[in-house]
Length: 139
Image (cartoon, rainbow, N blue to C red; front, side, top):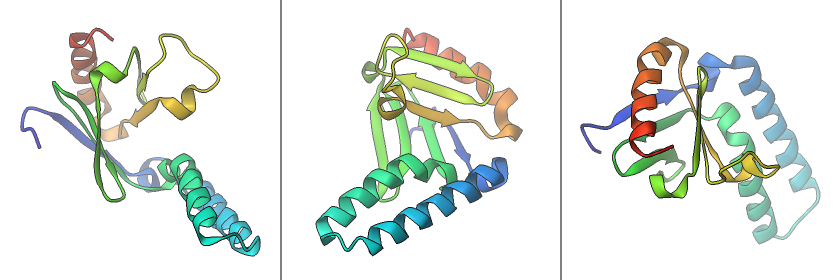
């Protein structure tokens, strides 16, 4: 990892306990429904991965890194990287950074964009640094 990178982690169980409990409960209910439907193993795995990609951020702790090359974020089996060139718009909010490949909001933005939540304890430190990094990349 780059030493000059801006790094932080976000634990939804500490920051948004209610959402984490609801997301985890929804995931358990969906897994139970999928198991009850007796799908083929391959179909079950694909559906489980799709559901987890949408619900996982509500209850799985996350780690992020922003640097000159782009954004890195932890995934269950390592790190994923998206270069700054993948994004056309950035929306900086007190609760986090939304990076979107679209120049304007769209109905499918939640599927294509990347939201990086800030922990409450680090917000005041992170917002100015993130603002500067995003501006350096024209977003």
